[in-house]
Each structure stands twice: as structure tokens, then as C-alpha cells.
Length: 322
View 1 (tube, helix red, strand yellow):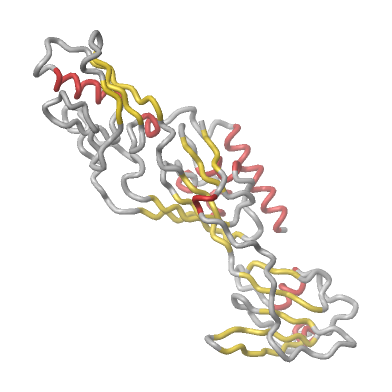
View 2 (cartoon, rainbow, N blue to C red):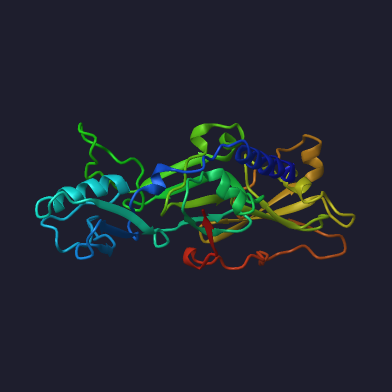
């Protein structure tokens, strides 16, 4: 069932991309960001030409020949050309100015990590939506909890540049605080537009991992199982391939509560006959199925998760989306 759901999600994501769900270009990516290399070209003059980046406040870090600083963060090349030209007109006669973004490669990268097959950093140079990045990261794994969070720091992107009544850009990128967007994978599968937002420079996307339980001992496939939707003992045993030939139906659940580990006994035969309740498992429970011919376990098992320590976000491989 898990593989089928994962396959359906992958097919859905790929189909939405093929159907044109992601447009070729985004106004967002065409605006000036922190880290951009900007060129000011005063046509017909080398003396006033300039190349540089932005100050921490979002202004052009120059040119020194201008009387006033020019606010550039989240503005278009055309709007900046008009603003710079207006300033040069105070000292030059009928100046013609062209402003261009020469290099976008130093913008903040977006991160995608968690329950995906290949966590990555993304250098975004065009419009890209969540579903495309999920595909580029290899898709969602079985360990997903079913939820995705997008943490959006302030001043890393230009979500919606504002204009005044004259159509001019306002100083709209004042720090507005961070934003967190929570999304359910089920909403992505249903095609909900709000569940497939555009991913912006600096976004930190995390596909949340479900808390684990561990099934060990006399089952056909001892394994770690992701805890979802009131997972009961009998369902967990079934997910581990059922009892092996040497397995005993009288199982023990080792449950960590505070500083202590409690032992909970359960009989699968009585559960199947309806004589007793099917216990609901909790995060990090260890279900030990005894094996015939071996003594019952008295101490809490030590679980080797077999999962390498996760890398820091900055160490993730970089993928350019252009």
C-alpha cells in the first residue's frame, strides 16, 4: 500500500509538471535580490557606469556620483532604470540609463530535506513550485508523516512587490517577520492549488518524518515502521510480514515513558479472537515477538536504526533550477 501511494504521488507530480502547472518564467525571479550583481549603464558615458550589489538595507551600494541612495531590493530592472535616470537628471542633461541584473547566482538557496530520497539545495533562477522540487529530490519516502512545512525567512525573496498610486515601487521589503506554511500531502494528491505553492529563494522545505516504532524478533520482516493514524499492534505485526514460523503470539511492548521503560504484554491470539483490546502503539515503541526455543527478553532492546547521521543543510548537494 505504501509503495502504491508513493507511486501515485510520483505519477501525479510528474503529470502536473507535464501539463504545464509550472510556467516558464516568474516575475519574482526577475526582481533584484540580495546577492545579485547589478550593472548601471549610463549610455554614452563610461564615467558614470557602475557595477555592484546591495547594501544590507536593500539600496544600491553606489554609484557614488548619485546625490541620493537608490532603493533596489525587489524592484525590476525597468523600475530601477527610471529611478537612477531620475537621479542622474539632477546633474546630467537628458541621461539615458539601463539597469541590468548580471548575476543571480549568489541569491539565497532553497533547501528541501526530510522524508525525501535525495535532499538537496536549490539555486532558483526561474519560477518553480513545490511539486517540481519534490520530483527533483527523488520523491517522498515511506517515512513521511504526510505533512510538509515551508519556513520562509524575511528579506530572502520578493513575494509581492507593492506599488504606490503612480505605479512606482514602494520600499516594500521592510522586514515583516518569518512565515511558516504547513501543507498536507493528501491535499497535493487532490490537486489543491494552495498545496502547491511557488518555492522562493531562502525557503526551507521539510517533508516531516513520522515517528518510528520497531518490530523485532519472530516476524517475517523485522523492521522500523512509521507511526501514523492510530497504529495498532496487530496492524504493525501484519506490516512486518506477520508472525514467522518460530514466532510466539505473546509479545512484549517496550515503551519509554520519561526516564523509565515500561513493559506491556499482549497476546495476538486473544486480540484476533476479540477477547482483548488491540493496543495502540506510541512513538519509539519496541515490539518484541518472542521466538520459540529462545529465552524471553528481559532487558530493553538496543535498536540500531541503520540511518546515517543527517547532514547539515549547507552540506546538501546543490541543484540549479534554470
